[in-house]
Image (cartoon, rainbow, N blue to C red; front, top):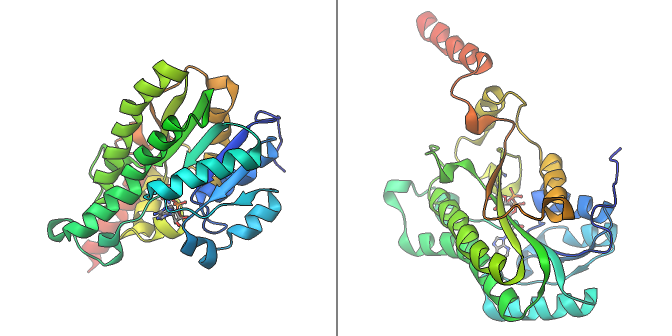
Length: 280
Ligand SMILES: NC(=O)c1ccc[n+]([C@@H]2O[C@H](COP(=O)([O-])OP(=O)(O)OC[C@H]3O[C@@H](n4cnc5c(N)ncnc54)[C@H](O)[C@@H]3O)[C@@H](O)[C@H]2O)c1
């Protein structure tokens, strides 16, 4: 049973990217609702039809507004309708959007299709800039609002198989800093990324070798991998008034993975593979 602290009482939030119960955005919607927020949920029209976002809307008493996060027209409509429905400017936004056609089509990093790469960058990173730019031009976010995007360690360190999503995440984190400066100075609005552990979701499971990656990160991290529910808890804190001076940061939410080199658990697992080699 989760304890609610009313940390987001009366706040208006917009959540991108809840596809199904496994989605990190799904958990964030549930937790922010429990903390007293009023929400608008959004995803692409096709994801709204294929996934079960409507169940989440019922559960969280929120409205779904379909929008493609790469379309300026859709974003303008989304921000207009969201403010009308919620009755004012947004206090927080979650960007939980990512997709690589190269990954989906098993194109390796040394054999990328460049039109797919453009799509990866547009959906997974530039959509964040588009969302911020539209929101700023429409003055759709309250002063002292908080905006988050989800990212992954492959932006800092090469992780085999993460493919062109690594480049997208590096761009996403850079946009966070560049826009964070402007939005912070003009409106006191903070923008951060949360760098989350490997998590079993539709997007996560698409990465090559995900099971091994998940297990390795879990064995290397002193606290183990962070779950989607724990990520949602962290988002609540970042959307609350308790983090007003945190901005332009890439915040690791990874059980300590980012500071580790080798753990006893990972070494033990590695030694097992040597034993196997010797016995073969
Ligand atoms: N799962 C992991 O291991 C992991 C780890 C670190 C960071 N992340 C990041 O978390 C975020 C959420 O992913 P998830 O793991 O919950 O998977 P998910 O598949 O549940 O969510 C990805 C979402 O992106 C949406 N999307 C795709 N194209 C879109 C578009 N054009 N416009 C609007 N929405 C679009 C999808 O419909 C989906 O809801 C992504 O940015 C992902 O890279 C995931």
